[in-house]
Image (cartoon, rainbow, N blue to C red; front, side, top):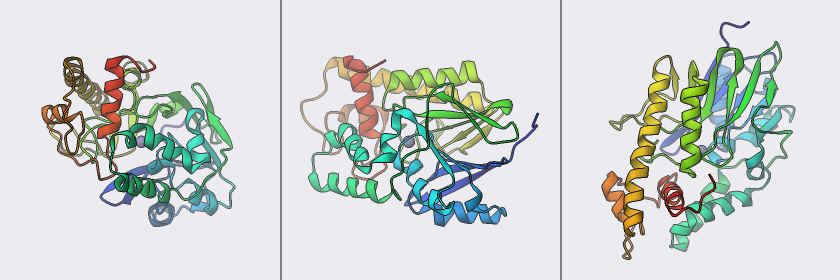
Length: 316
Ligand SMILES: [Zn+2]
């Protein structure tokens, strides 16, 4: 049984933010998530080369979910492997890899419905689609309980951890109990200052499951997230910090849930806030000052999630 497996975190930078991809060393090496379009060449290939690893030797491209900052580089990495790497994505989000238009469908259903200025909508859609290096038909779509074997008895187990997005999964390096949860865990939010939570009920359940049942020894996240003081934390967490990070994520959800419920049940203002629409009072109470005209932005995705939870239109 392996005592340790070499994991190389790869910071994929774009604009003011960064997303992490993870190289997992194995007889059939895996790359978990892929950053955006430019990341394959700019960050992934270079970081691997610095570690004497060739990008073309990657045999598995494993995607935790369908957001562009995780799957955007997949096609470019796949090309660099001579299309030999097998591409894996959660079943519920495979459409986002197969078809760029599906990204636009999701954008319009979540953020786009609150962004009334067509020029800003257009700018966002252009950004989202150019961040994707190409569309792929996945070799494998995964669901809860599936396993990926990387050779040498190294197994990644799939557990479904939805909430951040509807189909997010966590890959667990089985015998070490290391969890690649990417964005399923959001603490107090990333760069944009709020956690991105599409479905709060599912998010809560997923984080609770990680905290109480899975209890990983290490947690590998998709971005640096903030702690309660607003300070950015490392995206790679181990030891006792794992439980602290998971609990912080539940605490922030509880806070958002309370504030949103109170305002939504008492009635949202008829007057529209210039930036936050009907959610101006909620933004003020949680001290949110971000600008939803800039991407990435969690605000409307998350507000929409809590709104739907409170008015009872969400799938639990
Ligand atoms: Zn995401």
